[in-house]
Length: 342
Image (tube, rainbow, N blue to C red; front, top):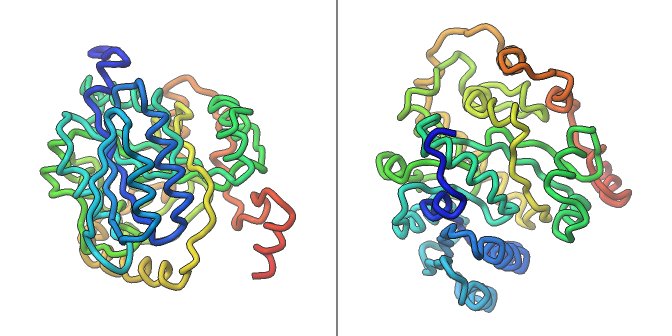
């Protein structure tokens, strides 16, 4: 690869920024932050965790858990009260970034340094101005076999393409995993902190980043909020952003998301997502003024990419599965019954 850096040189020019708020599932987040810090050791990758300190015993435990690691920074403070604001936390983390490149990560991700090197290399070489990576969500069973070392990343990836059900929930494409230039983050003034609680702050950022490089197009259904299991049946803004991930899908490259239970405050989460989408729709309404561009999905675009690259479309059959619901993906009988009767 032209301009390719060595493994050490590559990750030495990269900083990961990771938001942390222990309002929910505190012990799980502490354990995963510590795991991510441990996985990074010896790689030259820098990580900045931005932590909203709610002044609980868990917050003190987090600070202790992340102390003593090389190239790990913890920016901790009482930045806000109430709903989690990952947008603000990412901006706080970015203030500590001194490298030319950065990657947006979440604490629930399995740190795949090979993927980081590969896609940072593409950005470094000018092949792409930024890279968005898909994210495959694991069940509890899938997470346990990965974290225990019983199966490698490569083995789990092969299981996914072989239609194994037990280990996987769904593939998010696009996701908020982005390798990019630090100057672009600065040009965009970072994340929009008006998005309070989880939901749509990442889509807003991706749209603005893609627009900065003239890589996104308006369409009449741009503001469609429909979700699909299949990454190739995506609609609206998810489809337009998903176009930027087709090369990663072709390469079968994605991060793994380690399982966690849903937050206990479901109503608060649902309310924030609804309000955030209304705000998102208002500030991006100009993107719905485009013309129809043929296929309302990504199916044609992906098939054409397969043909252009000499790939066998049958090797990607899992991408076309669009069966609604998730009951067949629950990994225990108890979880399936809970899903069915709730």
